[in-house]
View 1 (cartoon, rainbow, N blue to C red):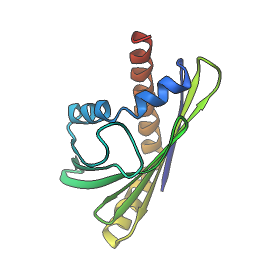
View 2: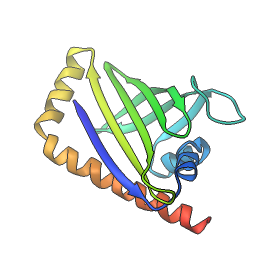
View 3: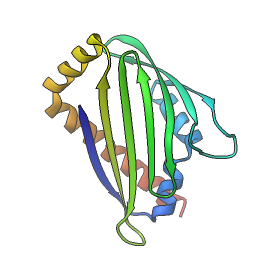
View 4: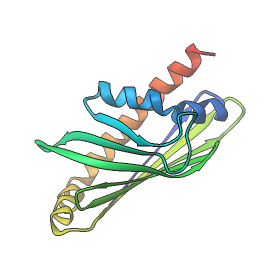
Length: 156
């Protein structure tokens, strides 16, 4: 199952990518949203391929855990995160494209690949509600993009 969203931001490409790859800030945002995120490996100096995190979060009334790895890091245009939660593999691809010197498009693709029967049942139930999930995913991405845009314009 795949979810996609694209949002345009009124900010230069390099500043948008720098904000998206500021993992300290992203970790703090996740904590504010109720996720427990801990970096398990990676350089302290900045983002790099191979960084890993362990996350604990609530989903459908249960506590879940995920191991996340930054599988690909190509500044200033692409990041790929691979994660495993139970029998579900998830890959998130973040593409950042300059539309002009002051406008940038962020594209996010999330693909879920079940590896166990229970994960297949979960993905199948999500597929039944795909229309609503697509809308909520796009709305969440729109909100995150607006927050990022406000932050970047305030720091300009």
